[in-house]
Length: 516
Image (cartoon, rainbow, N blue to C red; front, side, top):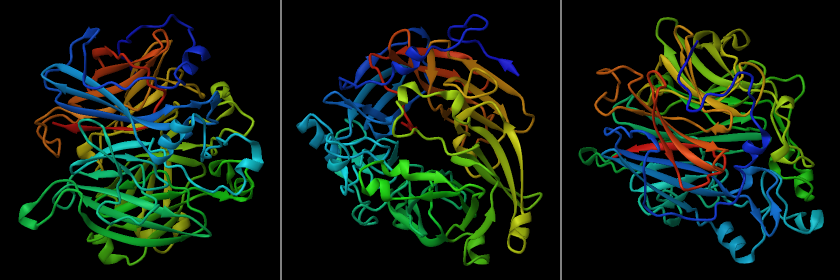
């Protein structure tokens, strides 16, 4: 393993301080519009041209009451635009119906999915089953709209430049009112011609239904196709409750992992818990892979129904990537496994969470023998660890989405074993196992790295190395009590620039890059 130069090397044996980590949890008190930001260290690459969008909770307290879990915080979009070696910063809350109502009331008027209660105790919360669409999980560009995503309902459409909220988007009638729309789309770089955005929605119950949807991401006048147009869809059902936060794609398959979860709605109905707190792992049971043939693919011609295969023991939020191994005929899926479902109980304070009591995420590779899956599902899967260091938010070069990738980048702990806050970025060679780590420093905490290919490497990354480009990462700086934007060379994790932002962005969720 190679250790890349740190931004502020910590003394040997130094550890993180809870006060630094927890200081990120705060209300964002300002909205900026097109403010120039300069590098406090290094130089912004002149070739970096486009916009980094980030989403995450920006309002965590109202009327003196804190959310029970950060995931209940109102969504705030941050945009950093790069051109000619310069950067400009904007941020804006998503003006959801719930945000506007609570801004006016000065208190919580909705229950949170992750346990936040309205004032008044269980009686005030009982039988109030409204879901507050907080638009706080991801942000992606589709056609002329920027979409703020929250997976239990429709996206909110924003202006890509001003970040002004246009309102709920049902994508030209594709979605019904209140229909679930994943916060984890996958962008097909062109497996069968033009690029697509592939996503899904879930209707969970004793039998759950997955709606798989594929959208055009660019105009094609010759074919009469506009960006944002629905190109294909299918509906499939599975037995049992489906808790699906993420999925993966290959040219032929959409790959889901149905975690072995049970949902008891009674405490939620009675106002005692949030809906997500009513989830629990099923003791002694394992999840299963649900392999859905993509519409119009060779798999769809061979299989009318999805393939179902037992998965290894553990719980998965996020997948790194999937691909079809032509040499072996296997479908390969790389995922971050936890030993159990990590949660924060009703009596816990998320700012005081005991990291050592929560299972860490570790990257595992699963190989699914597709031929054997049809006749002997139980014997169709093998698995191996790729990285046992605690990790999250893993990514590959965008052109390798759904294809075999050599490199992965991810947020990791500075310590090599056990759970702790994420304070470093790792580059992992998936072929050799070689690791390179950049450490943010003892008082800094990293978020999801976004890989930006160098312009001109081609959609297939064939005219240049797969690791030719940059990683953009928002870092919470506990010493400043504000956020930094760090630009790393994707090849060797050398630090290119640090931008000290005039903004304190709480620990966030997902983001995306849109080339100019």
